[in-house]
Length: 323
Ligand SMILES: Cc1cc2nc3c(=O)[nH]c(=O)nc-3n(C[C@H](O)[C@H](O)[C@H](O)COP(=O)(O)O)c2cc1C
Image (tube, rainbow, N blue to C red; front, top):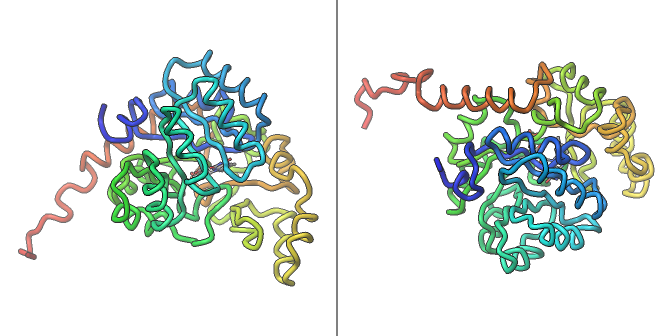
């Protein structure tokens, strides 16, 4: 095993596919694990029994380690935790809530627990709560975001200085350059979301995947800061939300505009013009819809080429005698 993150999960490459609502079911998670990374089933869009089905399906599709991501704010979180433990899941990526809530129960059950944090302070609290590793996610990331608005570039090194446990960087990583940068900043692994959402095995609709390919370099905005901040591709829904936010609409008004199941409609059903199209800033770097195996191969070979120093050799040679 190559590094701390590989050792922690028993995987070949320190690349985690982030849990994603309506995107990361059994098929994507198993494909990432089969390619040597860590696949996560995103429980956030699943009722407990559906999560059970996905866990069983993933187990039929891979013999390699995979895990589940459970957003703590979900009303099903407690039930999902119990059910996943019962189904033999031993890797949990918990997000959107306090690390104190489930870490003790999961550690008691012998599981490996990772928590997603959006600031170095929260990363430290996660370590204090007893987690085995932490994902620090910059606000470039797709999906729900922290309120701190810290970019990955400033978040990772400060988190590195704040914790000793394995550190996984997320937000804005879509190729080997991003992986190499995360490692240079002090991370020992990466969690990638949006790039994996546009793969063959992602459960997202074709319309969502095609939108990512054609979205251009400035497509997303951080929306709904007064509710739960979320990064979305701009469309007619975000325009309406922006108007409401500009006139300081109440939470109830914003929720009414959003309507029920807005993320499902956009991501899964393909209503990308009017639904909640969760995606990260790196959507602009997505130009194709590869298989997961092809993508993993690219990520690993690009990262290994850059990290071996081929591209940078000699650039910072201390020829001027700086001391
Ligand atoms: C469509 C979509 C859905 C997401 N859903 C979740 C989720 O349910 N739980 C979670 O912890 N993170 C979620 N995320 C965040 C990802 O797990 C990951 O941390 C993030 O996408 C990394 O940033 P990137 O998009 O720049 O790669 C989601 C991201 C996207 C794009």
